[in-house]
Length: 207
Image 1 (cartoon, rainbow, N blue to C red):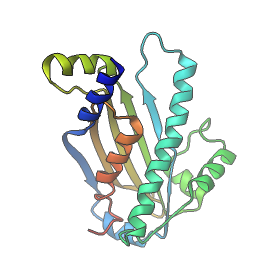
Image 2 (image 1 turned 90 degrees about the vertical axis):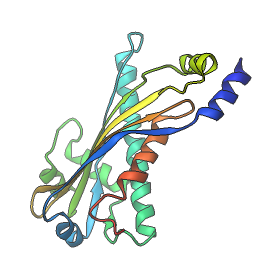
Image 3 (image 1 turned 120 degrees about the vertical axis):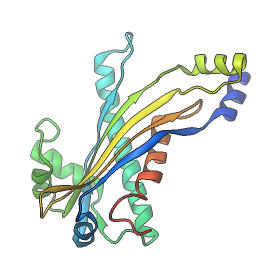
């Protein structure tokens, strides 16, 4: 059975976009983005749909862990775009970002984007929200594939990314989308796919 599961998983690993992304640009988004010299990536807010058998404390810890993992994925993609010469702004090191926020009392104390700008000393801040769910277990997805030859979603993420300009204290960009992954996918792989798509749409990124 393990061999069957492995072979089916290899055949079904895929990431799917559901519908089109909703993207917002402020009228002056590209001008303000061009004027920014450094931006910071805030630790994402992560929510995980819990099953009846899941311990609340375990879910809270998983959300904290995934928040840091997703922040690293986002940082990695922003650096990749910068190495490609498509982003000119400096990206504040996430260890510096997190240390400054922790010293200020985050996440126990919530802050507005403008307050985070002052705490971090940057020109722009990128925030995000990720809602994770598992529409179908891996085992059920394997059974469905063996019986009907149909792939099913085993991981879903609803994401909202946003960038605020510090000098003008305003939202300049927002990206909303829902991503699904079949057998063999993981939340981290989905975030990688999200950033692959979303980073192309940011006002800081040259086409």
